Image 1: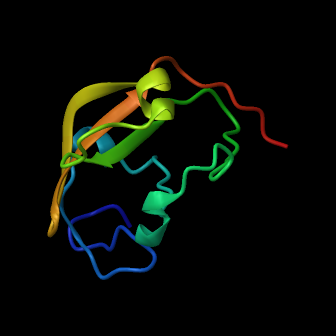
Image 2: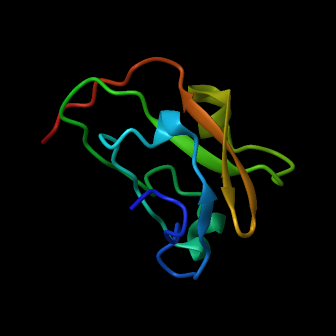
Image 3: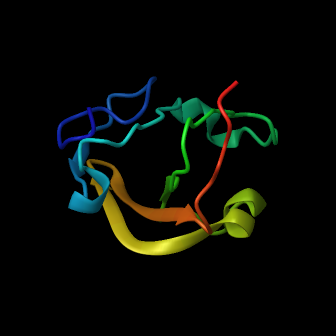
Length: 103
């Protein structure tokens, strides 16, 4: 996964067309959600554990007119973009390395 031609949603046939080399090193893990989740506003919508200190990136549709608070408060915009057959996604990364203990 995580290369041009791969699907990036669980519930749509939308495809990646270009990924920056910084985000495709081979050691990364990607979390795919459903496109139908785009309206979900629950703070606890998505939870995950990371066994070591990591940098978390979030790809967010560049057509968005406003960003959710959780993204504004915890992430910074990068110059990296992910291109898809549907548009360009801006990439954000965590303000600092996250240290999330695995359960």
